[in-house]
Amino acid sequence: TTGANSSSTPVISEDGNVFYGAYDDCLYAITSEGSVAWKFKSSGIITGSAALANDGTIYFGTASGKLYALNNDGTMKWTTPYSFPSPGVSGSVMVGKDGTIYFGADNYYIYALNPDRTLKWSYRTAGAVKFGIAESPDGTTVYASSSDGYVYALTSSGTLKWKTDYLSPSTITAVSDDGIIYFGTNSGRLYALNPNGTVRWSFQGATKVTTAPAILRDGGVCFGSLDRGLYCLSSSGVLQWKYISLNSIYSAPIIDPF
Figure (cartoon, helix red, strand yellow):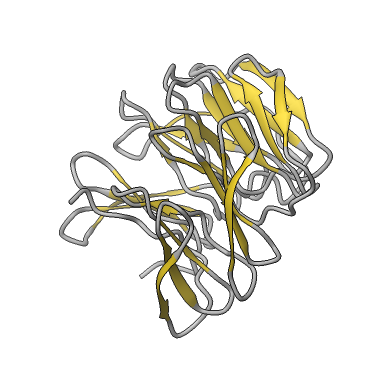
């Protein structure tokens, strides 16, 4: 039990610990047996998922605009010396293949930081970047959904490769091992894009897509919706099944490794 509601998707470390943030401003570390290993009190509510680096560092952002780096025992390693306009960093943080820390902020910017918290680059969109960042399989491209209605593809050095037509994305992108980019929209449509930004296929759901897509081992895609449905599509975008839950779904599905 946390001290308030939580909507961030949990992340799982190799040793089985589960990390997630809550609206009580705390990041929780829960053991695989379900006990609290530690909790860290931050400067604001946590709505996005944390990111785990190979060296055990845990990164997450808060509504106050701070970005935190914690050691794996829950002690603070560093925090950014600046804040973004409230509600700040509401999306998930991502650690790139080269160790770069990526995140979006409500001040319209996509940020890339070095592991020592120094700024590597920033890129300005025309809307709040609320949903977090994804990366191509080879680490050369990062993708971000913006509230300006576009999905952006940037090089790992921060220059624009392409952006979509106006599609009104409502989720973070997810990228498959073969480079296909998936994201949901406010209109209820789920898109699959080719690595060059062209539309591969799309599927129209009933209402707004509210979670990040999760990619199955066979190339299928699962996502949650405002209509309380958990949808599962084939790799070609055909509906396989739909499960109706008790309420709208906001935390992304997690697929086990089997």
